Image (cartoon, rainbow, N blue to C red; front, side, top):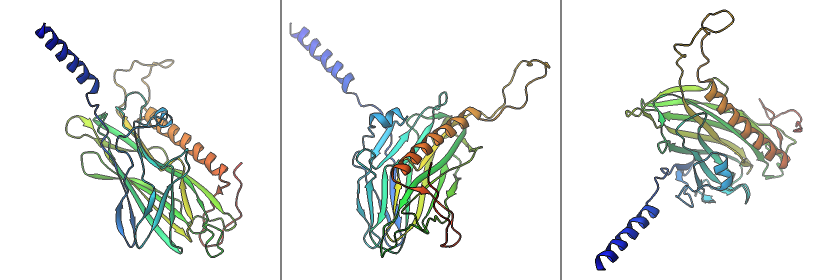
Length: 320
C-alpha cells in the first residue's frame, strides 16, 4: 500500500511539473531616451512578462511591454505619458518564423512626449530587440519602417501653433555580418501657422531593403534598432497613436527553377519578382497602420502637415 501511495505521489508531481513548466519567453527589449543635458536615460517597463492584450495579440504581436509613464530627466525634463486609457504607452513585438506571409514587427505606440521646459527641445528615443524567439530561416531578410502621429501646440507665450517641429526615424540591423543601416524617414520642418494640431505619416517605399541574414547556425535572428529623433518648440506635444513601426521577414530572392514553359508561346516565364509576397505583406501592414493613425488624427482635429522652408507656411488642409 505504501508503494502504491508513493507511486501515486510521484505521478501527481510529474503531472504538476508538466503543467507548470516554464514557457520560453521573448528576450526583453530595451528602450531609452537621450537629451542634450542629461544623456542616456533608460525607460523601464512596468511588466517584463511580455503579455499582450487581446487586441494587440489579434493584431499579430507576440510580446508586449507597457512603458512606465513618468517625467524623466533632470536638466532636460520630458513627460512620457499614455495617449489614453485605451491606448497605453507600450512597446510591441511580433517575433515569427516567417512562415507564409507572417512578419516580424517592432512598434512603439500609445505614447505622448512633452518637454517640461519651453523653447527649443530635442529628444532621441531608441528601442532595440533581437528577434530570436521564433527565428526565420537563414537567407534574405526584408525590413522597412514607417512613422505617423501628430503634434499638438503647447500654447506657451501665446504661441498656439506648432511651426518648426520635425521627426526623423532611422534604423540599423545586425544580421550576422556587422551593423547595416536600414535607411531613414524625415518630415522636414513641419508647418501650419494657424493649426493647433498637425498630422504626419511616412513609410519607406518599395522595394524594401534586403540583407543576407545568418547567425551562423542556418537561422536568421536579427537585432533591430530603431531611433526616433524629434524637435519641438514651446512645449508642443508629440502623439504616437499607432507607430513608429518596423516590419520584416525572410523571403527567397532566387527565381524558380524547373518551371515548365507556359502558354500560349511555350516560352519559359520571365524573371521572378523578388520577395513580392513578403513585400506586399509589409506594405499592407503599413497601410493599416497609416489608416489607424489618420483616424486618430481626425478625432484629435489634426490637419495634414505643410512642409516649411521658412516659418511661413500655407493654409491648413482639412482631412476629408
